[in-house]
Image (cartoon, rainbow, N blue to C red; front, side):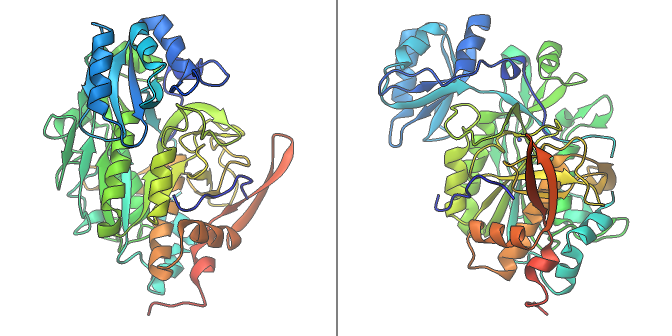
Length: 465
């Protein structure tokens, strides 16, 4: 069981950039009353002179006014976007811009707009086995199928025509940045940095194809685990087969071999996700939460150093803290894959205290060799050789904490149907109290983390039939 507190009322994972790995330790640079400036941003600026950055604002501040002042400070500055969010904007900054921002009381923090990857491994147990392990098959048989709830999937989009999702894609969105400096192009079907409405998260766009293969399969696979519904050729139901699905594309195609290599990607082009696009997607989910009855948002992505304590005060790793808190206050669980480094600790953004950090086990309840673990973990779920949907109407096996997280996301949809009045923290406590204890050594201490069991969490006291 995790040792950090769950807060109420309020990114397969991989290391994704050289700057992210080599970020200097220590607290953020800050002058009295001024914004927190990430040390990693300063280090990267010394190396490249100009860095794509997120400028996060204090509540109620005028982003366009701050942007104008940045432009006045340096001819090299470029504002990427100011209108999408009232809470932050993206800009290419140099030293002169940072000097201008250090005393700007309108600005909360400044940090690099980094790239994250999906947490999966191609050495991929079957979905019909994993759903039996967590008891969702028995919960479904008793009528608890996630009906009336929605799961939001922040990933590489979805195969809208896949029979596993038929009639249950309730809305779509895309936040996918273009960036000429790394030859990054948007994956939104309209070619713009954002798109909303049905069709916006289509994973079968031409830009998703590379070397004859659809490279945007990860999102469809994750969505199928969380909420696929049994059809001919499918391995079984997903965890919440009657839940609605809100897919949001947050990945970008990177055509630069240098940028892909720096991110640890094995091939070019590579498909990575900007922090700023994730933040925009989380804000979109918050706006839709009540109308769509969203139970959980799934983020099987991330990167960075391993955290053994909450990263909330780090302006870079903890950047999603405000969004996660807002979602929890709306009854939406932010479910995040812990990472695939096999370390004691979790990656970002699973390190945020209000995230539900998920590690991976196999179907024998052994911790997957690749899974991050330790006291920062909230729960385990199966993540080894999971057979789920991929574009083209077919199915494939994948492994990773990416695959573990949607078992929990679907679990929250099932629990929302069964216990509609419970908060995120109360549902989490019920899943932990009824889970299978997995004890192990982490950082020279004994840790016990529960693998979820939906049948024990819901049955036999309740039945929807």
